[in-house]
Image 1 (cartoon, helix red, strand yellow):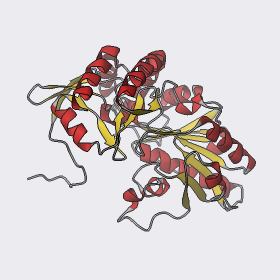
Image 2 (cartoon, one colour):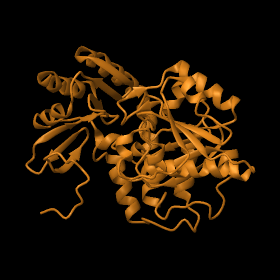
Image 3 (cartoon, one colour):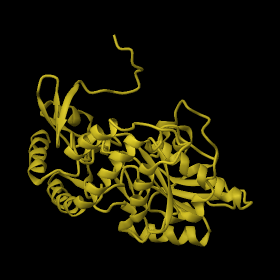
Length: 374
């Protein structure tokens, strides 16, 4: 008998430990991890510097309230803003969905502070922004909405790579547009470069806020520290989580100074957000990921080229999807039996999110297993 709520379709394995790109179950069987906690374990498992930081920080201070100054937050915020395209400020939370909630609240308050009734958002079909009510409402997938209606009002969904569909949804009450440059949960769908240029022009012309959800694409996953930096984009707000903590829960919302000023004392908060432990680890992760960016590009290109032998490949860096002509859930189960951890998203897309430390020999090992299945 389990005392857990039945909201996860769990695979029949329980892991006891991890090292590098491998996990080990309770019987000692080794698994090659090509999903990395859905993009969370950016430096793999039991990374020496992460482990050392957790040990040292746990002996000093785990948590203090945000009622007091926090030098650990300042350090991480400074590093995140350095990778941003403009001067900005950071709000820390605990997860991706919280970082998106903060972005939605911040955008609405920004316009209210200016006396304007701009509260609506345009998102995209097949997007995924989280599961709390604001982020769920921004998510353009009906299957996640079902049973939780009514959703938060003010969200509508355009078609990715169709700028006319965006224009049709904008009115005088539109506050901004929220987009993933690569839709992860939606099937590793890439926004086209020309479309993103048009979107940037649109938000400038209509005086809207551009919010880019970097929860899955950020922190080096695509070969740039932020995925939007592949393009000529100038977002007002970005959201981060997953890989930022290397396995320790942390979320962050980064905004340009003008927008960030709308969060004033008491306007938003988080009890655990940006505590000393999470920020100490995030600081190490940021430093290590920046060193890995050339490696992510090189190994990502190698992986993508080799994957093309099996079908249509989507994505950038080490965020890749293989689109098949059949349901891929059984393939995921068979891969598990053979010691490879992958993921099925959007029904027919095998998603690969290996740790950023993955090497060519690990990719070859994974493809040998995958090839034997396909």
